[in-house]
Image 1 (spheres, one colour):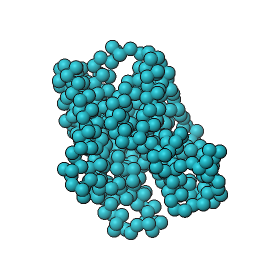
Image 2 (cartoon, helix red, strand yellow):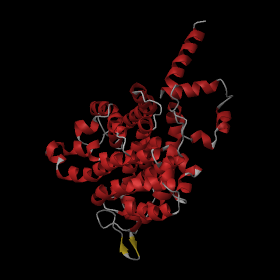
Image 3 (cartoon, helix red, strand yellow):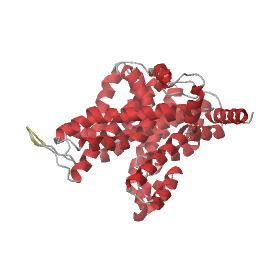
Image 4 (spheres, helix red, strand yellow):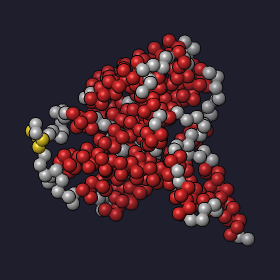
Length: 421
C-alpha cells in the first residue's frame, strides 16, 4: 500500500495529469516484474489456467448459493430434463466448473517450482547463494502490502454492511494478517475466505529452505526417486493416519494446513529438479501435447477423492509438457494469457467480492438458470478479472520493485526537507 503512494507521488513530477498517465498505459504496464530479471512466460500461462478455473468455480458456486437462498429463476430445464447443480451427478461443463478448485493445487505446484528453483540452482549448479534474510524480506515486501490492504478493505465492507460486529472482525482480521486463522479457528478466514490457501503458501515459504536441502543429494536418480516416493505416499498417509493424530476437534486445522497439500509442493520441487539438472535432455516434441492435453481434461474431470491420489502424479507431467510440447507452450506463452496469469495474486484476492457485487446486479433481471450461468461465465468472470487487473496495477505491481521501501523512505525524507525550507 505504501508502494502505491510512492508510485503515484513519483508520477506527479513527470506527468501533466491523469489523462497523460492513462495515455502512457500499455499492455506491458500489466506485466509482472521479476526481481531476478528472469521471466518464464509458461509459468504465468499455468497461473492463468489456475486463476480462471478458480474464478469460474466461484461464479458457479455463487449461483448455487443463490439457489440455496431461494432465488427465483426462470426455466431450468433443458431438452434432456433438469440440470443437476450440486452433488456427484454433475455432468459436462458443470462438472468441470465444480472442479475449478483444483486450480489451487496448480498454484501449489507453481509455488513449489518457483521457490525451489533458486535453491536448486544454488545446490546443483553452484549458482548464487540464497540468503535467508533476503529471501524472507522479499516475501514480506512483495506480498504483504496487497494482502493487508485487501483485508482492510474487506473489513470495512463487512462493517459497512453490518454483517459482522467490530470486535468479531478485529479478532479474525489479526488472525488473518498473521496467517494463523486456519490453525486457530480451523476454518477459512471470516474476513476473506480465499486466504486459507495463502496461509498454506506461507507455511511452505517457511519450509522451502529446509525442503530444498534435498538438492544436496548428488545422485539425480536418488534425489528424484525420493521425491516421487514422498509424493506417492503422502495422500495415503494423510487419509489413513494424520487426522486421528490431530483429534476430531482439530480436523479442520489439519485439512487447512500444508500437511494436507505437501505432495503438490513437492511436485513443484520435482519439476524444478529436472529444470535445473538435465532439462535439455528432455526432448521438445508434439508428443508431449498428445499426452498432456487429455491429462488436462482428466485432471479437472476427476472427482475430488480421486484427484487427491492422481493429481500429485499427473500435475508434474503437465508442467513438463507446458515447456516441452509444441502446441501447449505456444498457448501458454500467448501475451494475453501470460499477462493475465501474472496478475493472478491480485485477481485471486479480489475476485470473490467482485463476483458477489456483479451477481447482485443480476438479481434485478428475471434470468433463467442457464442464462444466469452463461452471463456469469461470459461477463461476470471477465469483469472480476478486470477488477483484479486494476488492483494489480495500482497496488501489487509497485510492490514488485524490491527497493520500493527504500524509495518510499527517500521520498518522504525529500518531502520533509522541502517542507521545512
